[in-house]
Image (tube, rainbow, N blue to C red; front, side, top):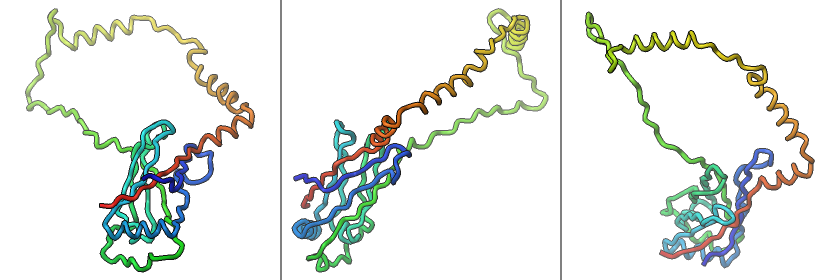
Length: 221
């Protein structure tokens, strides 16, 4: 059964102070702690999920429950977003994965809080092959035969005719406005953006934070 456990804050703009990704603290009640210990003893896993967007599908991550206890309840979430700042992938990674030296007796009571650090991961496009065009030199003393077209002219003759045609063709002079329109438009856009009311800027700052409710579930193996 999925139950709410924490929230993820995603700051989408640099104008909003704070880290790009931040997870709220997750204090464990005594009952929740005993459930986690029992899950770790049975080699179970715990799962977390959140919506990629308010109306989007869920992204799910999981990890062994014993590794969370072995890490003293410290873990890292690696979240991948697309070009629209929607979460498309999630990975839960406790600090330690070795459960061989785990002492379950220290987790029988007391107050404990799961400390989660969220890191933003950008998608990797992969390796792109590098294509190089190499022209091997001809043997010494060998002349490259000209390639003739259907009309009997060679490529060099066509290039000379094309160059002569371009030299004879009169070039149309551009007006001052066509040359420097970009330098006029940029200041106008800047003035329009800077003249926005402060109330609109405040609302834009609030909209720069996306809050994702996170659900958790414990599963026995």
